[in-house]
Length: 316
Image 1 (cartoon, rainbow, N blue to C red):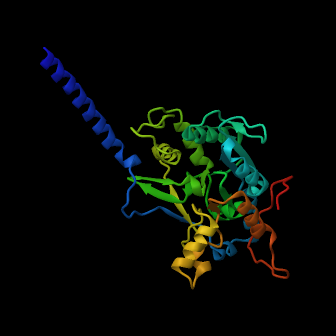
Image 2: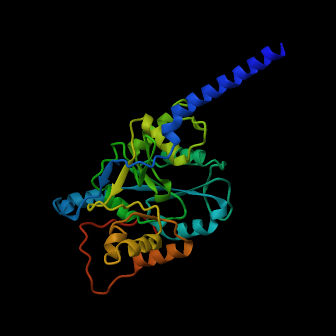
């Protein structure tokens, strides 16, 4: 009897391990990091030549119709970053909302009351969609990321928010392509509408995820969007350079110095870069000075259009 009982227990254990293996293989493509080459879906910013072909009234109409809702995900331990974002680039959003894991008295924020990063992102997007009516694009960022919202609007000029766009710096994990949250990502209102709809489907888009191991929040987002027919697209300028950067300006310059010492500027960054990640609060203030305040006297900029600041904004 002891032998039979022992065999039964072994059988149960082996059966359980087999089921786990089947589940693991089923989720392998979602969570395993691929090291092989892969192809992104590329989507480019308009060129200056394209804009100049449009009549001036049309350019003005386009620039005024692009309204960006910024959702910044913060933690109480990141107060210095939070303060820097609040005082710098977030002022250029048409609406900026900070979403915190818990109540913080120092700054106003939407208290999501959870430390789970996927739940934070999920609930922040639900809140943004419910309370951010009238916006065509929804930009999501971390507080250690610096964003140039005018360049984001320029990139989005020739994109229809009525189509499902999910854009950022994309990478591939198995068969899953997703936008890295460190570089910031942007969703069109149609993509967000579909996403909020699938949130109610606990099979396709569960709150706690479906894999044996926990996926990152950016991968969970991509999985849910994939079920709605929305796929990550890699953003580039008209020359093919990355514009959602997951590295800081300093890091990108150092890499350019090491790899292309004769072409540091061209080898470093796009002229219409949208984000830089890993910026300290002090570096954000320096970037703010360089991007918005420092101007060569007497030099005229020949931009095809102007993005006016939000009404009642005190931005630079």
